[in-house]
Length: 281
Image 1 (tube, one colour):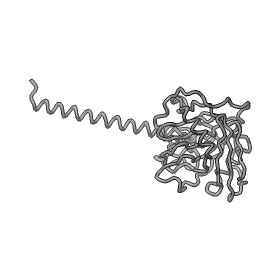
Image 2 (cartoon, helix red, strand yellow):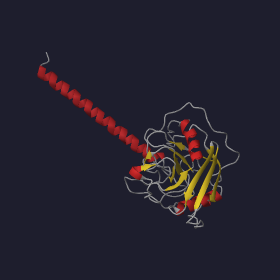
Image 3 (cartoon, helix red, strand yellow):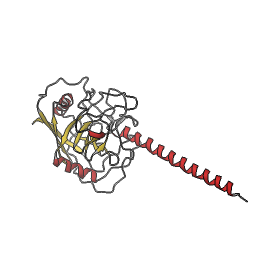
């Protein structure tokens, strides 16, 4: 016969065990979330540095770096592909040993137009806040670097971004050189939020180890909904209203489950940059 005191102790132990289980599950969930944040936006820069980003937009690499921020990748969607077939052509295998010389007017505004299979996305790029970033895209786009590249990652939980700019299409590509972080004190980044419409660089910065600064390459992310992210990713552009409509179409189609090989959650939509141009506004 179990005494009242023994029963009380048993109930106390069971309550303690339940609390421990909940705490363990919460810690596991937090670790998973941080891992996704670390891998969602990183980018392995070809022929250069490190591995994954550790935050939100990784210059893709290390699933534990600073690139990705939302742990749960994305739930698969059965929505039909809202985009067209890619234009004929192949990605150019371009690589450069060093950052291009400054050729832009640092006091001017530039516009990068992405003609994608899902519609046109115009990005306003004022040169003064991030001159080296804008100069780099002016150079790469002029060489046809982004033409026929696919946007390889769409995040639909935690952070809301479409990541593009990788000629390899798997999150490991880059131009062969890196550029410094810029404009990290932009007033738009209040409260650790990258607002909808922001375009920023992926990189390999790991907030925990404080390593990987100035590791941007060619990968960038387009924010289609306010996203909680630390100010570690160079904001260099703003998406046009029509471009935001295109992003909504892409995000509404959802993302695929996490690819165990690359760690990517590819968009269900066929998002390919048929042609990119940069022009002085």
